[in-house]
Length: 414
Image (cartoon, rainbow, N blue to C red; front, side):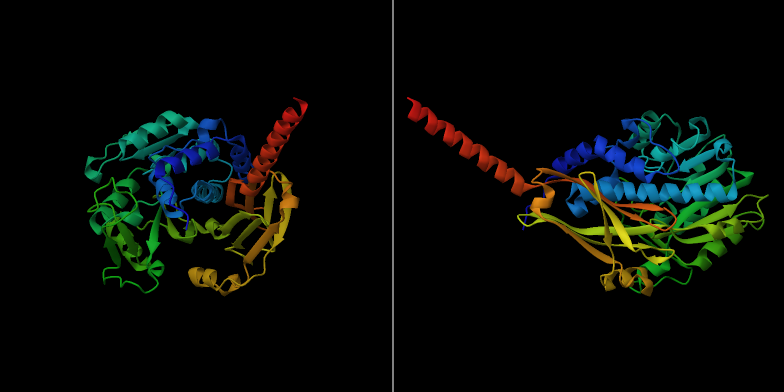
């Protein structure tokens, strides 16, 4: 069993990856609706809890950075679709607030899609807010632990709140919902994500009021009495909207619309009466690369991929040092069926192999794995540079033999 790499080493490896031209090209190939700007767009703060949580879990910088950006890309596409369906052809003029933006996993991409003058962010963590404002040149507003202490003299057409209401106790859930809804323009929408009760898979019971709050989360820097893990029923959301917000706001639920885990609710402002255009919303492809091994036998990859809308994909796209391969799916993955409660995903598994000869004994192997749907929707399953230890050792062995040969020739000559 390999020893767990120290976090500082993993952070350095992650930085080397997301600052590389290889990774910039990978992200650009998955952003078909906008373009990334400079290297600063891809820079991740070393205290970003989302990346740190992934590094600690996977103990692999390539997998963690890939996961971080795959979620960013999927969240961005969710926002983009909502904007396109609710405000067709007017995205450039929409005033947008990314509330509880963290260290900017989404904001970095929004800053390349929405004019910076129209994009504002808010966050309770001072360091995170300063980083997002300075790194992506966005106007910032400090948030607060209590909605009563949050003061902002602005109104927005779109307020996006990812992974905040999924962490709030009941009283803050209701108060923040009311506060943020009050900041909408009449034709605006408030979008927020939640953990639905279905994610518990029967492991815990939801109380009769429809909300379960547990004082634990991946963010150790926040008070666990106000930021934990929250699960809700759809009825709780309906009752909260009815009891908390004025009038009868139009509401639309997008199940599993955020990283194929959290539900997204879209609430219309006072003049928004119809959100049925969101019937066209698609969740896109998803998947993971479970194994990534280089040995004397060559490169071995194994994983799964599927379109959450359409079912199993025919293949995944694998790029090795610039060479493209289409790897067929078809292997049984009952674990994926269970996780998504979707029998269509039974044969979404795949595996891929290249021999050392096919790898041409390269010491560094650039690997990209993508899931692409029939509509050209894209998910980044993996991107990273793998060290080919076999080729490295072979090169060292050849260098040693050459050195020995030169030594013998020198002895013979003299």
